[in-house]
Image (cartoon, rainbow, N blue to C red; front, side, top):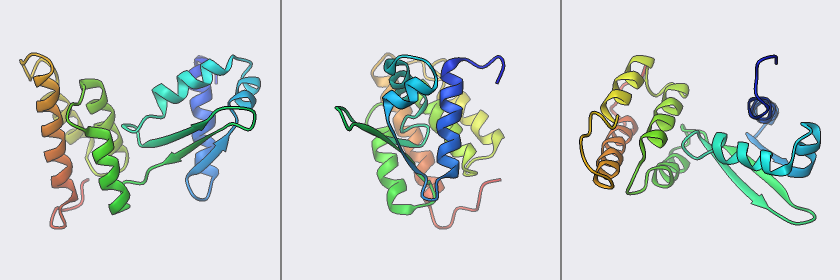
Length: 161
């Protein structure tokens, strides 16, 4: 683990726990994680808010207080109903370049896009490719990503890869 930041180590540990779980869900205590990694609980919150986002394919539920916990669920993209809800939550009406890039990475990771398709679409949604003022640029990017995802969800669309 040499060369990895604290955030990288925390992320790796949580992903390891998720991979070991049978249902893709883990419940953790923020304080226990902080003690394990000898850090403050806000560092755990930082990792959760930046590394376990809906764009990256995670749902994070947090309950604070004495018996508080964090529930992290990996959202499978092959679950049709959950996938559609995930798309609605992830995209919305506006989509930043960073969020779109995360989403494209997730689609490639799940095998719904090839690496080449991911690179091409990343170029398409890049701010230099969309010479528009905000918030119009983020609206156009959201429309492009919705069109891509709706196409991927079509029954007659051949498997990626």
